Image 1 (tube, rainbow, N blue to C red):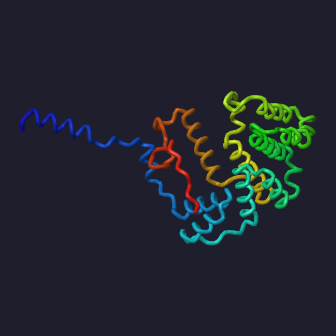
Image 2: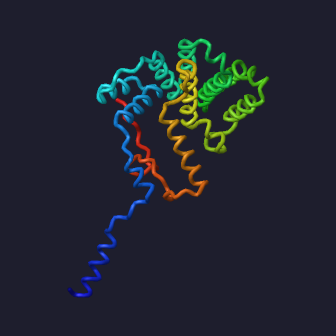
Length: 248
């Protein structure tokens, strides 16, 4: 065989060779989680996060036994949706109808919802009369802030939205108008309802992810033999890609 071709062949073989797996990755690949356990985790997530239709559909497709009915799931979905679209008054009304005592027992959650309602009033008042937002702050938030320093700081920060134009806001003020605040508040409300009605605040898979992170951190601190990076196994190995969940 021509020496030049032999070198090319060896180079080609080297470049196309599959990288060897780390010993840890090999062990992980050998662990086979029962599909029934994975399906149960998915169903639990859909139920706990408030997706009744998706949960019912998945339960049938995965041939899972019916779970104990959660009487709050539909109400939780409606409340979270109202918060996501900025209808905070409806969310508060629906929450009080579902559980009349929940806001009285959780002043921080109540203040967070009222502050978000104030933010929505300020958002809608851009370029118009802000009287409604100011009156709301004086009547609903100021009395609560008078006896709580943290509430007072949050109220003052929120009222600053009336002073500065949208394109001149500092990052901490701009964050108040970002959809993340709606989503975070909706999550807080969902967790509060779950805790009062089910003695749980979140889906089991969230707890598992935290346990996994703790286990990795603990192992690395003890200098265990681990790969430089351990993937979660989502999105074909790219954990930085986030695709929206299709629920209908």
